Amino acid sequence: MKHIILFDTEGNHTDLLPMSFTRPVAHFRVGITTIAEKWERCFGAEASYLTPDYLAPKFPVKEEASNLWIAGNTLPEPGLVKSVSELAEGRGYFTSEGGLMAFRGSRAAFESALENPEGTCEEWKGDVRRIIYLYHIFQYNGEALADDFRALTAGRTSCPLSGSNRIIGNPLMEDGTPALFIEEGATVECATINLTKGPVYIGKDAEVMEGSCIRGPFALCAGSKVNMLTKVYPDCTIGPRCKVGGELNNVVFFGNSNKAHDGYLGNAVIGEWCNIGAGTNASNLKNDYSKIRLWNYRRHTFMRTDLQFCGLIMGDHSKAGINCMFNTATVVGVGCNIHGAGFPRVFIPSFSEGSPASGMSDVPLKKFFDIAARAMSRRNVPLTDGDRMIFERVAKVASQFKYS
Image (tube, rainbow, N blue to C red; front, side):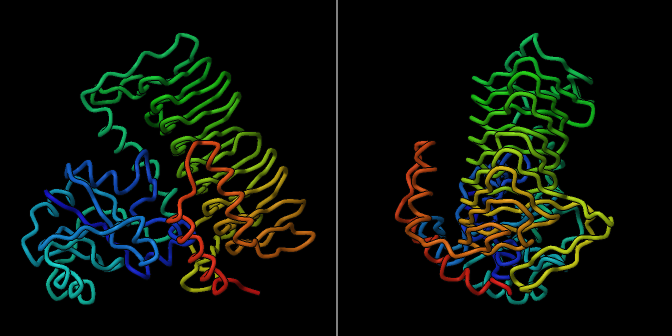
């Protein structure tokens, strides 16, 4: 397999805002790795991206005369990977809900199939998980985490676990492979790790501090930290270079973000370069136990879901001060700064700052760039001109996603 192009459609990309404002959908982290990393691992090939024009300079597409096109919101399944790898020229697969899923051929043939997938493609009847709406990220995270765990640890030996820790459950899975894997340089001391519901993965140079309680499935990616006395429930992924504390349940951190102190976060998705202050809590269940409505950018309204549990969705570079409170299913855009007492509205447009008491105002781009550059420099990552161009575009379109 020489080359893969992971493509976004306009509708799916918009449905997945604000997380897709700053990245192709294939760069979403679901499980231990991103969707792109999963496909690259399956095919042993480097992927490129067909994504909105403003993201293309940072995530360019690399085309050949014939390419394997895969929808960037599609998670690989063994049967799907095999079938996709065997696609003949000019053929593909689609799903009735999500449209074109995979295609082999030229750019022109791909664009024709995208418009009319039923013309040349076969409907996929097998197993598939597609990230169509934001809540699918945390819904599929536990299964994807277990799949990644098996793939990343197959045939490898875990680093030893310190005797100061307490393990609950069988350290071996049913097939005899380890249920706990510690990468090189990781530190885990005086923690309780429960393996009865799924595996636990501790990435390179990561750290789990004393007194923490962790239930698998759980992944702590490279360079991240779990602070002392943290309570972690199943199906959580902490992306690279994050710090977490307090209480977490079915939460996905994309990377480079902090929730380092006490406070609850459940059924949530947190982007990159976010910071959630001490004592901040986000509801994931309505008091009347009714089904949840979630803001959808493409519909420009709150869409019905079948969910009873949905917490905070927070786009890149957004911040919450100490003791903030978020209602069930709050969607926070890119570059927001929320502080003060009380509950903000359940949709906060990008580049907004303020509090429930004083109201919200726009964040000037110069101020945003200054804060973003300082935050990123703490991890020795520069804010590039390419990044600035992306945020300038997001700021231009953000106004159309406001509501009164």
